[in-house]
Image 1 (cartoon, helix red, strand yellow):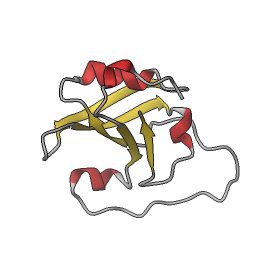
Image 2 (cartoon, rainbow, N blue to C red):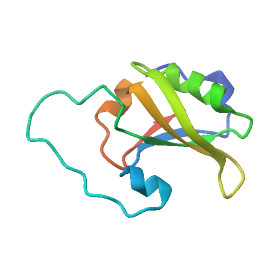
Image 3 (cartoon, rainbow, N blue to C red):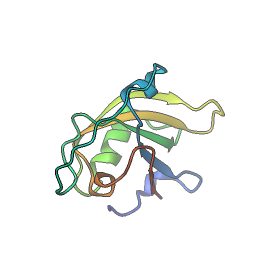
Image 4 (cartoon, one colour):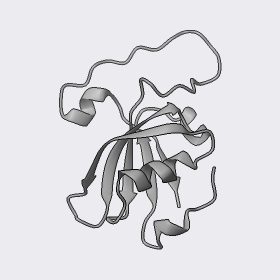
Length: 117
């Protein structure tokens, strides 16, 4: 994992969570996920996985978030698909995909969170 980002600020912690399904992000009916019986290392390609990122400071834009995510160990080409202010108004939430998923997220399960200080 990369060193803490000094620009994150003292009152924020970025939390990245693999979305349970594409439909759960858009409010649709979640579709069942299929698993493979083939054993092996977790996939590194992020083409079919979307992550929810919570806790970004209000002054971050898409470029700043992509820069932060791109500094995480193993991350390649993070792509922010949405960025919005949280209902409480103190931070932002985004949905993100990666060409290559960061190491800390590769083994995460649906709904599991990874915290970045």
